[in-house]
Length: 178
Ligand SMILES: Cc1cc2nc3c(=O)[nH]c(=O)nc-3n(C[C@H](O)[C@H](O)[C@H](O)COP(=O)(O)O)c2cc1C
Image 1 (cartoon, rainbow, N blue to C red):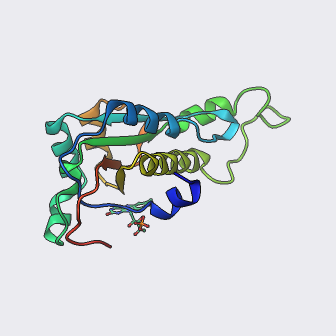
Image 2 (cartoon, rainbow, N blue to C red):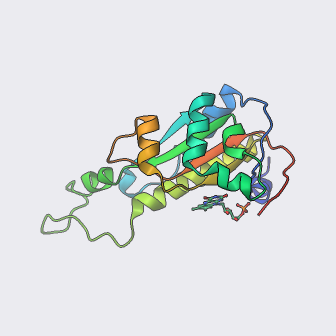
């Protein structure tokens, strides 16, 4: 697909069919997400991939799926066959920026103008969303306040922050959109 068409077609889709996502497509999508830029080439982001239905249902609950359903949406999180949880580790950036080519002249770490670990995480998420469109698939990103719940459900270490959840699957006709 032409890049301009990928960009035009990308949108948050909140209803998925039961059709599974092929393993090869999933690998290509996650690979695209790993090719983003990162400050100092720190690469402080990772993806947790979830396909098991019970785990997806618990993640959906942590993201407040019932609230979406009450608003008239389909249960788009639990029905999506794949969840991709993008994660960032701030400490990786501090470790990288304490290396000799990055420290200030006096050996101290830079004053961070903006939290680049969050920016890099956003860039990684965008690549995943666009790569999914290129595969003929659809995504929805949702945030959650239940970061500790996600950590404990997925075995994510305390110093790693899950940014939210990307639901991935084949688009179905939506009852409602925003
Ligand atoms: C950082 C971020 C957080 C978002 N959080 C949610 C969310 O919690 N739930 C949701 O349904 N959509 C969420 N969205 C999706 C936005 O509502 C959506 O991107 C926006 O309305 C534009 O629609 P489009 O992406 O379909 O073009 C989020 C998007 C971003 C970029």
